[in-house]
Length: 303
Image (cartoon, rainbow, N blue to C red; front, side, top):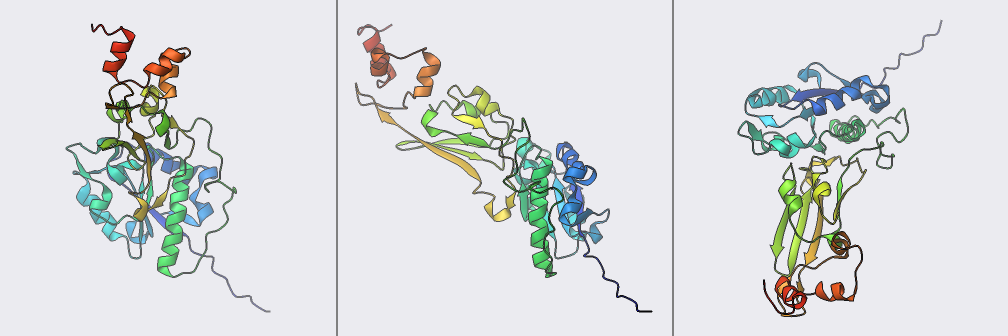
């Protein structure tokens, strides 16, 4: 009787999770990638491992706290090479809302090599899957096994063109033409992701997506809605792109038509908030600085 050779299946890429002091928000989303069929990592040819010594990819959640730092570094060191490390959520990437805490040692990449970042607070399971897909492809390349990613069980489940879930808060979008430079967004940003700098001819706005917690406070308090929340959920990226993942814009100063004083422009969005409708008088006053506007509107009499 002829016997057929046994063909060994492709061994799965093994994942090991390390909690570096998280609030468990990202861990709950990671649980979905292990227990919920529509987000299962098995579609990527991966499985979870209970031992770091048997793992290929390390998933780190939470800011790296002083209390667990040594344990995290020890567990990470037990994972054999080649290994790929994924920072899940903004906390291990930048510290998130805990960045200035006395109990936080700092971003994970200050102490160990990170290869893939998945920003969010927490990231959607599909965003985590996209990050794991990048990590698995990188590990297969480093290990030289030549394997390719299997087709996902549900097409479009983690690729960038997949539709966003209803009500998802994704990356922020900035419209410089609507900004009045009030700096309210910088003041209320929970993750310290927004910075506004004065650069000679105007203001430069910068938002770091790797610090943004997608809370939407900046959009909520922006008087002209220069900041809006999008449903773009797919922000996973390789480590080399960590500091280039930004939203930027420039708000130029304008000269007062009365005295030539440099000032911020009165945007159409601001006028719509302030007045029901404009008229020639308002259009004339909007090009004047506060002092000239006061003189014009009060007939030269100062209060």
